[in-house]
Amino acid sequence: MTLPVDHIHNLDSYVTNEGEAFESVAGADSVKMDLWVPSECVSVHLIDVPTAPKRKWPELIPWMLEDRLLQPVEEIHFVITGHRVEGQLQVIALSQRDLQEWQRVTENAGVLARSMYPDYLALPWEAGRISVGWRDGICLVRQGATEGFAASPDVTWAMINNLLAQEDNPPRLSLSIPDLELVPEHLRQLADINDAKVDWQFAELPLHCNLLTGDFKSTVPSDGLFGWLPAAALGVLSVVLSTIYIQLASANMAEQIDVLETQLTQGYSRLFEGRRPEPQDVRDEVEQQIELLFAQRQSLSSAPVAGLVALDKLMADCGCQLRSLSAKDQELVMQIENGAALKERVLNIPGYQVAIQAGKNDNAIELRLTSSAQGVAQ
Image (cartoon, rainbow, N blue to C red):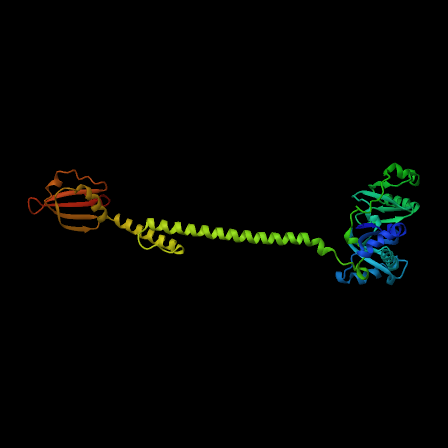
């Protein structure tokens, strides 16, 4: 038998009517429950937020409320809900004797109370609406997220009239009352009325309003560990799977790096001669090779070398012999033996001026090649 949430008044009926069955289950493993308790035994107060550090609030608040209570503060249990309304702090106060009595009832019913909440908080709530429910001749009223009360019908209608009169824009009224004759006529005309009963099992638990705090804190062994086991298992599984994924991804990445390094070094060997460098040295080696190629290109573009390259095709198969060569600035002067064949060729070299003069003998010539950039006319 499992009753995770119920009203404490229902525990008496279990003991009276079904006590043997309930106790047999409780004897094996006591039922752990969250309980609703009578709201007429609690009072809700709004106070200015203490200026002292928060850790000192439990010591200060009882004396701040001393003038509002009918019992000595030493006999009152205070619960700070932490809910602020218009800059104020909300505090629930109730007799320690009532709490002790409720704990005795749960023990007699074979129940371990995990938490207790004022039962007006079991009513539905929405902004701009006052909800009124019914419990065994008592009206439960909830007018805020954590604000409400419980009272007899006559007191309840008077307090609701007061709440409506305080607002320039009166809130809507929702009544769940079994007998409409109990409701004043003017409130019936304003209200949405139904006969729904409070569902103790499925009402939302306002955890910050738990009355079992401080010296009355529940000693029930927490089910939190077992409740969190599935989530913890999923978390561990996620970590394991993530670790495996990272390892596989790392191995795959290392393999890809090896392939890329091999391709890199092979590509270097196809472009340049010499030894194959290590992958981490390829970049430096390539930069050096490129600098060398640029230097070679610049050398080949210099006037003497460029002129010789340009003459290469013109002098092919001419049967002539180079006797001497001199270079000065942008000019080449060549003494050529058996150069008669060159006289018959069209020596047209773009960017250069070519001049041929007779040499010291009949078959010798002097060929002068001058860069046009120098502006030298032959």
